Image 1: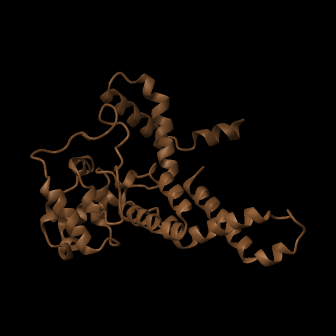
Image 2: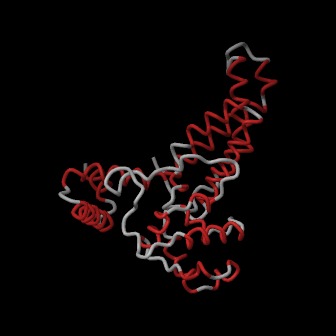
Length: 262
């Protein structure tokens, strides 16, 4: 399923739920069980009260890589505050979200440096945290992952209402500068001067090429599982993936052509 289709399905479910709540009085006049039971109506209402002010805002802005760390942190803060309105929903949402903290890992948090949504003071603090732990050499491989260095990144162990992006910085935060070949010289400059900095602009080009879509990640997982058994080493594994990706770019519609021929 494509990310666009997934987003459309999500919006459809939210839209139907909102309509059910809006017409709740009319629904009560229908024969019992025609649309929902009394118990179901309360659950739908609780869902709409949560989705409308909390979840939908971040759902609509999830496609930006540079905004992702800030969006996720602000969403987590919102979920924590929602405990005052509905403790059970807050706990359930936080439990589910803790399985998807990809952009709050040490490796991905630096993306927020290029986000216009992040306040200048937050970006300055983020840059200062990075400079405070700058390693003597490039971080060529993540240090805090499960497995052999390229497994699943370790998610933050705890996030509170006072947690900032700067608090989530670690040694692995420097890995993205190596992997995307980003020039970090702008970090020592004033935030107001970043947009005019040559190093900042050059890095922005690479950052904006990142895709934040579910289907891209799912395709990557499927590709890895298909060819992992063929790899003899990490280098061999990466070479296989690059060859397959190059072939797919040269023949993007091969499956469609096969279907038409059949």
